[in-house]
Image 1: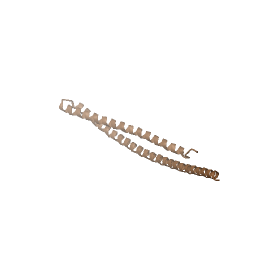
Image 2: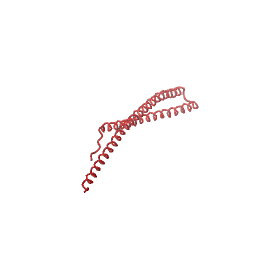
Image 3: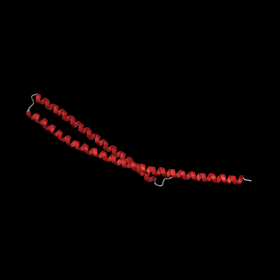
Image 4: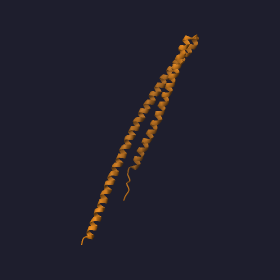
Length: 148
């Protein structure tokens, strides 16, 4: 009995590899997005902490230069937050693009897997037909030899 060999197996293997690479790339960009979001959260926390210090300074007797320095640092944090928000948006766009690319790769792989499965089903059907013909021929030969 012959063995099934798909003529386009190398393409199927390539599509599986492309999907794996796309999954890996998605995990990398998701990691970058999470990192950017964590940095943004730290900036927000630091800003809140400095705003609290500035409020406490207004209650206590703190020099005007210290208050101005605190305010300047808060302004710097605001600018950093704006920049980090832009970085988060870019990272999110990269994640969306990577998900879309992965989706295309998954669909591509499914198409090739389905064509391979269809080819295997045709192969099995052909093998069953050949087997049935062989059995029919064997039955015919037996009948002819057993006839008086």
